[in-house]
Amino acid sequence: QKSINEGLLLKQTSSFQRWKRRYFKLRGRTLYWAKDSKSLIFDEVDLSDASVAETSTKNINNSFTVSHLYS
Image (cartoon, rainbow, N blue to C red):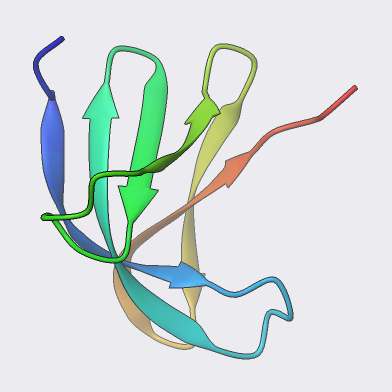
């Protein structure tokens, strides 16, 4: 499936104290990310049940939050 959008974004770490640059691809309702565009293995999250909200964190423009509940 062809990517809708892809490119470098900043991803907040699990400790919520640092940001790391990651390469993201949005395909349908699935978001993939990896360390760089040449990576063979991408982590993924299904966005079917997720909500997206525009956010403004520490004056970072064009930022958003993806909230996903795991059951």
